[in-house]
Image (tube, rainbow, N blue to C red):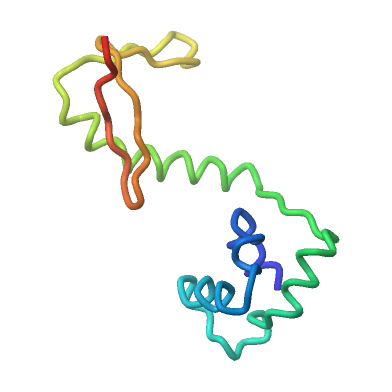
Length: 114
């Protein structure tokens, strides 16, 4: 039950709005409709009770950072520019302004105006 709630926590209100929306979420997450944790009424009761808390270990955040860096590195490497890293490593400053845009499956590097 907690694994399903964790996957859908950001969208649980929409996911549990109706049985149809819950079914779409289960299908998207490849959760069999007949599995015990897929029960709509039990999940709705569980989420509405707010008797849970979610947390992640520091290693999970590090892993997510590395995976994100690996996703955007090719875009950054394809550009003709330099980046400067502070001696303490607390910030990176490029030679030109830029921003990152999150897409559904990848990150994009976009030039900023000005």
